[in-house]
Image 1 (tube, helix red, strand yellow):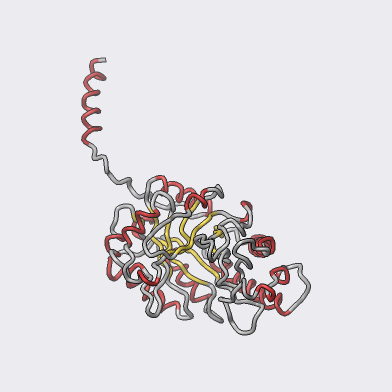
Image 2: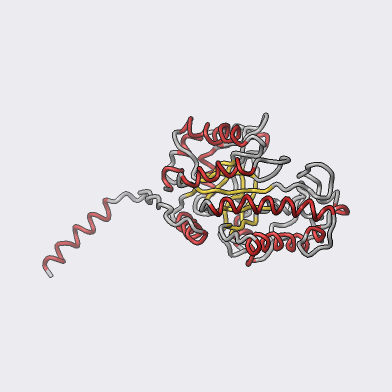
Length: 348
């Protein structure tokens, strides 16, 4: 009893000497299966840490986009983002094997991979992603694209591309890559052909859900793609332009994570409470500055805005006259070296 009594003052002294603001050590991502990644996300949200993500492609030249948005960030800060963002569409005949090379390389270095798919519109000639879903609503019929739909030119065009995408994803599965998969995003807006056909009451909501479920079944059943983490990512809700964030939700069985895409003047996450109502992990699908804030987005504020709520943020890439990427905005080095920011060297 005397020994135990002597230990009490020592333990008390040790406790009060520990700094109250001591940073929780960054856990390593050792299990990179779908289950392991989702568990890791929960841990780092609880730790008030966040994975740094950078989109580096929406161009036929993936190598150039990687250099401009990803490599240049390392060159200026000494750290790579832990999450790489790539795209399977937006441009005609994008080189999917080349895109996969960058995904596999980053994965093998210990990082995480997220993929978007800006799919070609099968209801118009040429390659067209941005086809106004409200103005063109009479020309768009998702039901025509489903696996069991009657044969049509639209179905043939869409399913050929869908199978091409599935084949590319199968290559990633074979390489052991788990993919954060974000298809048909910003569906509550009207700037993509798969979007809502009315901002107040989208009557194509059930058909959108059927299209999502059809893709889910094609990938998981027909192609055996159990390496996908499915992300439902509406745009920030705005009653002037978009439907609500839940208007086209595919259902809990077909979604693993909900995310928000947003381009504000200053970092914000105002729709976070609405996203929590889905009962799924909540993250950021893509973020960047509004045009008037190009080059002036405070990256340390991005971190403060999302940590403790989202497991990662994905900053979008820069393009001509648009300074959107992390490296092109304020305090990039401070962000990448912040104790709460999980970069590639910290996650592996």
